[in-house]
Image (cartoon, rainbow, N blue to C red; front, side, top):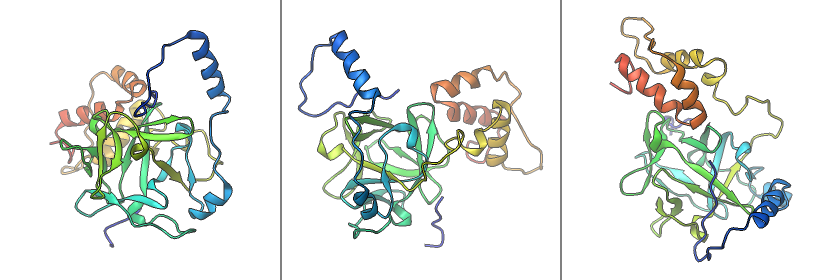
Length: 264
């Protein structure tokens, strides 16, 4: 256990839900209702205590740092040392998530996140639709989209399917629609008193040029003790940050320098 250290929102498509015709006036009313928070369900304080003071996240802006994903009451997704994920055993009331059940959330743009396990690996959905944690860097496959609607949450993987747990306890992404099996709670123990940049990774605070240097320092293999930074035009970095694929573009730029230990 010593190796284990803590380290564009779409509309939720519900199974069995009939499609409605769009009406501008009705949509405007719904948007105003949502913006006012009338549909946000506030968690009972006793429920927070029962979960060891880990509270349920109800909006994207509250996703930061350590999180735990609850698929059933008091049951969280758990990282295994082989890179797979399973549903952990039920906790007693008042217990906090186990270290293997705690993930580090990294916000990417305004709608997507990356998730990092305590083993230091990023999560993704692989070709057989299982969730794995074996990636060393964030690319398009390592991005997830939390979709909030009417006080509920479902998490969309890179294959446009929502996360769920199968009968064998494996965490998978199989369904393009969110039914009861795909509805989860993402819990956090963060305090609500946070600075404006608390959700931004340390490497990304400051100018984009500094951001690139920070990531080069983090991932470069310094065989000759020389810092190798790509000198090509950085204009595409600003666009990439807005579109949510900054990490992928930075990885491509480091790969061209043939000095990154993860992209040779």
